[in-house]
Picture 1 (cartoon, helix red, strand yellow):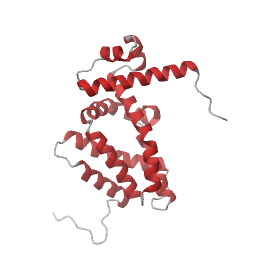
Picture 2: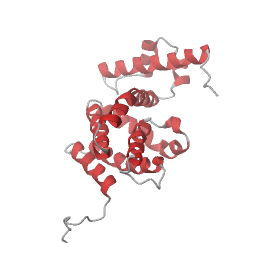
Picture 3: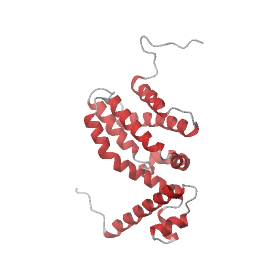
Picture 4: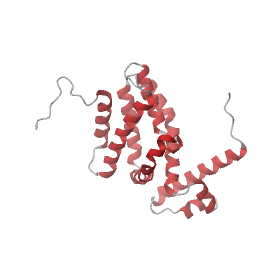
Length: 209
């Protein structure tokens, strides 16, 4: 069955939601996240304050919508990475390093976003609409790895993606909390652990106590 096109009312709501997000992010870029108020966002988006709260109950929810928009817009670049990169390791590092470079310009925003998202983690497992959409891009790369025989195929792609996302969250939290944390090195180590595991490899260094 063909997917039904959204009606005029739904399109109007989507346009209003997107306008709110765009105007809010413009204000954040100029003033900083903490300085922007919901009243300013409503005025910039040309909507009533009550209308704004109907779409987004808190400012952090607008940031969440912005993150989902960014993930959708990154999909073509991820598809190109899947097609052109040599192997799964190169694809994963291309994805994570690219995201890290973008995050580096919006560190304050990410702190607020994660503080808002953490209490929703359990619910987001049941409701994908609460997620950023990043996992869909990650699953494209993992699926290619499974198809190419580089990654195990006895586990669902969503499960493999979830394991890697959990490790990624830990690396990201370290970067947000520790000013001297080497984010790129942490990502490289994370990808290596995901692909090679924690088991000591032949010729690897043992820890001496």
